[in-house]
Length: 533
Ligand code: MAN
Image (cartoon, rainbow, N blue to C red):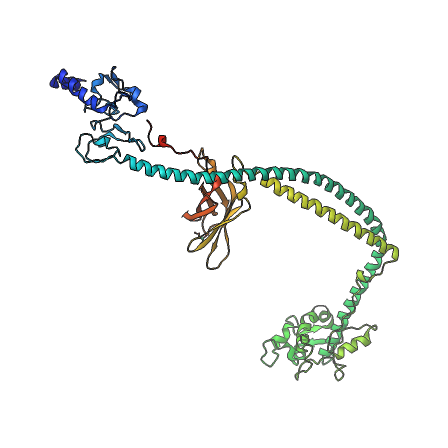
């Protein structure tokens, strides 16, 4: 205040009052309009009352009103100089009649640069400012009108989406209720079929028990026959290989058979032969029958061309195929009396003969047992069908409940996007977004699809939760995190994936427009372009 008083003294009260009066006149609107100092908005006009002292808007000082806009900064917040550049932190209000009111730093007042379209900020600088508010106002209004029309169309589609979404939710709930009723019936039916199955299976089990013993005996007999066939075959092979008939197989005896020439160098080395004798010099018949023959047999069969039985020709030194000329040297497949003739027939064809298997399926049941088996089969099938129906119903209920529990927006407006997919391609990848399900990436030049994330939740900032979606738990990034995706939604006339980026490795962002994100548009009018008439 000291400086202020000094100021007042220097310029004389009267002079200042006159000057202030002139300035005041310049800064006020016409008498019919609200009077306020230059640079003050209508909203703040009530804080500037010419008949009273002025208190800085931050409350820091109070002084006579004539100090307002006297080109000297008295308030710390600059509020006493809204219409001059005296304060570094003041604000100048451009009324901009015909366009949008703006506020510029008061330091720009009279700096020779036109900041307000109505040129009000350059009232003393001599800058050649032209009032362009009218033109700017009409261009902005045109723009606002276009935006309004687009938003209105988007919003109209959103209303349809809301309708569809609510309808879908309603039908899902109805379907769910119907399915639940069906589920009760299906459960009852399955229990009934299960009981019938048990009732049919019990007599079947009792009847089959009688046959079980026969089956087991048949199996035993079969196994015994196979074992004796194996041993007979091994014994014959032993006798045949044991050329000196001393009851033992020696290295030298095996060396005479090219079948044992493993490295195919034309001779059977002692080591090659010993390999088949468990690395010993000789082998007794017992050992040969149990463990020796299973090792040797594949080599003999190979040498006999049994892998390709249509080539019966042998080379010198090979173990002969069982044929007429070498009957005594051949290795018959079975020792048993039964089937010998048949075996011989097959031996002539160079085949190893196997006895026909005795399996439980070859057992014939009596008519009564057969009828019980058929009845049990029928009951089992009926139960399986009832069980399948119940499980199908349960699956459908689960899917419905999952879909029902999804948050499709405050008015179900995002529901119609569920089940749809949208694509966007850049140079390298085609990206796909299936809202409420997942996002993925597929290389354009071949390669498999990579999941970027599965639907997790709405992820917009506080107050606009529905402005973004989060998809997470995508495919693990090599040496990095699991991939994840954020989708930013904005109002648009159609559902469209606009762009995709990867701001951090394996963290993806998509921009998506949808009518569902449009809000109810406000009709633009002249009042939108200035705050006072
Ligand atoms: C693939 C793509 C890329 C990702 C790398 C990470 O090439 O999924 O988007 O950045 O893997 O190794």
